[in-house]
Image 1 (cartoon, rainbow, N blue to C red):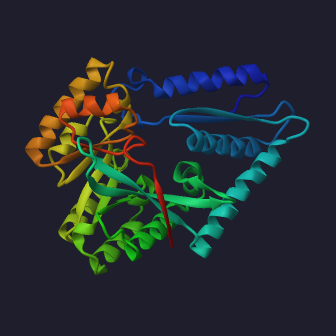
Image 2 (image 1 turned 90 degrees about the vertical axis):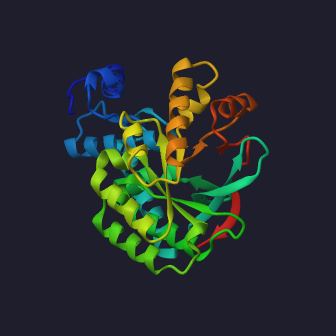
Image 3 (image 1 turned 90 degrees about the horizontal axis):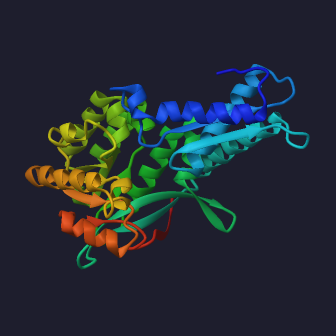
Length: 328
């Protein structure tokens, strides 16, 4: 959307209006809304080329994706920071990601998935990090830019290769795939070959698919799931409960695990609707022999509520923070 002649305040208002319209399910009717909706915009009080504004708006969108679970971001030009400087920031992100791929300098952290009653270790969640000085950038910070520059598939291959080469020895590990990679035919070919050729014990690796991938390309996602199961691996799906088709695919796909989206966990104690959904998920999972895992468990009250609802496993800071120094 190109709006000439608007003020900065008007640009902010329009951005929020667009975001509100896209994020409202009643506006879109039966159209599926991704669980994390973002919007970005670029503003320049001086005349600026449409291409420059478009590139800046795209960078603003990626910034919103990398800094929040849902929301907006507005990049503005002023006397000290022209839009071209923001565009240079995008180029820096691309260079950093390309360097990461070229040097294979990804770090894998592992976060424990535990039983909610006695803390017994069930599995590890695999989390990718990129070193940034003395700290690390999370996938939430860099992956939106990887998608912007069509590098998501290469990053997923790097992460999967690193995990396959150095699996934790104590319990199984979850390998998380991005929806962008799953719908990419080339990535599907690579994943099929890698999983079928691997000599690792099949029970040591669990392949995890995002629920969003089923909304983007259900057939391709389901095909990859069936391939993984045929090769002897167990599969999981995350962010369960963010789609109106959740109960349909839980009843049809060959899942061993399903992760309940954290918004239901955090709202469990004060939302009757969340409790009802969770109870229904537990009943369906039990009939299908699917192990439910709650995401983002942070308080004792949440843990108690989940146990009361029949969810027996979870991950989150209450149960253990990410940690490891596994390097590819």
